[in-house]
Each structure stands twice: as structure tokens, then as C-alpha cells.
Amino acid sequence: MATAAPMQFTTVDYVIFALLLVASTGIGLFYAFSGGRQRTTQEFLMADRSMSCLPVSLSLLATFQSAVAILGAPSEVYAFGTQYWFLGCSYFLGLLIPAHVFIPVFYRLRLSSAYEYLELRFNKTVRVCGTVTFIFQMVIYMGVVLYAPALALNAVTGFDLWGAVLAMGLVCTLYTALVRSSRTATPGGLWSDSLSSFRGG
Image (cartoon, rainbow, N blue to C red; front, side):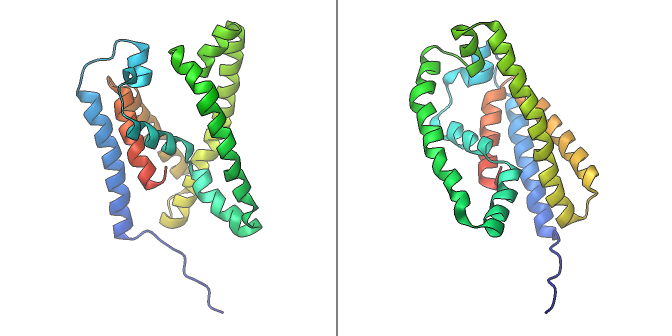
């Protein structure tokens, strides 16, 4: 039985990859250098609640996607069967309950994060503990999220694995500095995330 030749990026793949990076950066730069400077936390974090449903929904979709899910879920199903779909069923409860119980409370109180609510409901110590726990979890999670696509990039392009991890970390840091810290961070971030939802995270 003949072994299949390993898949490699072609010129078309590199062009599409570059165009997606340029489009994301272009959206960020457009919003970074146009519009007025944001003056309040609400304007910076929530776009002053002025964005329509479409970019917010697509941004949330892109936020829930990650290389771990895109690469890992099909592998899990292939290796161990379709019981993984039970996790998808749990999202109905896991998303409907917060959407109808917690989000309306946060919206009425004009809060921008669950941590603000923790301080409002309990005290600042609880808020800080929740924040530190989340940061710790995200630092560990980001290591996995950077490693997984770097592994895929290494497989199809031949880039050095740790060079790919470093390059992706630098690109993400630059993107965050340009788009998320710009004068109109939220609209630029939402539209850039909307583009990301179509290209798979």
C-alpha cells in the first residue's frame, strides 16, 4: 500500500494566508487612524453600545473558536467516535442560561465585565481573586493555543516549530497593540473578529 505524500502549502495557499493577514491588519489600521478618540471606559470596551448585532455576534463566534477546537475536535471524533457531540449539546444550556439570566442583569447595571459584578455583589477582594484566577487560566491556555497552530504551520510549511510559536506570538502582540489599543479599539476589533469568524478563528 502506497503512503500518501505529505501536504504542503502551495503558492495559492500562501497568497490566501497573506491576504487574510493584510485584511485583518487593514481593518485595524483603518479604525486606528480614523474616528475620534475614545474618552470613557464604555466607549473603549463596549463601543458605547453602538455596534449592530452582526459584528458583535460574529466577533463572539470568532472568540469561541480556537486552533485547539478547529484542530482537536475533528481528531477527537475521528479517534474516539461521535460521543464528542454531547459537548455541543451542553452549549445549549451553557449559553442559554447566561444569556437569559446573567447578561440582562449586567446590561441593566451597565457593567462591562463579570468582575465588576463580583465587586458590586461582594467586595474588591473577591473581584481581584476572580481576576487573578482568570489571568492564570488564560496564561496556561494561551500556551496551548499558540502551540497548536504552530504545530499545524510547521507541518504544512516546514517552518521551525519554535520559530512559528515565536512568530505567532509576535504577530498577535503587534495585532493587539495596533487594533485593541487603538483610538477606536472596539469597532476595529469587532470587525476584524467578524472577518476571523469566516476564516476559522
